[in-house]
Amino acid sequence: MDLRLNDLVEMKKPHPCGSMEFTVLRSGMDFKIRCNGCGREVMGPRLKCEKNIKKIIRKEEEDTL
Image (cartoon, rainbow, N blue to C red; front, side, top):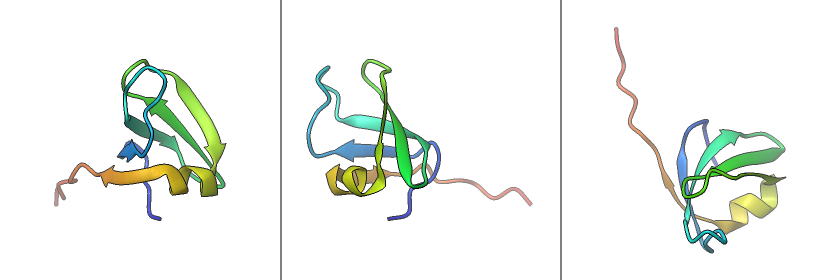
């Protein structure tokens, strides 16, 4: 799964605050994600996070030449 910094991801299950959208802060062997509802940061293993992701919302980057 190709996740980049600052991508928005929608998870299958909601965070206890009720939000289902998270922002990717770190990707590698572990993912660090921030809840967009309450701001709590969660770090977890890559396989577990990839399994729980429902949709990736990527902001289109404009190329400036």
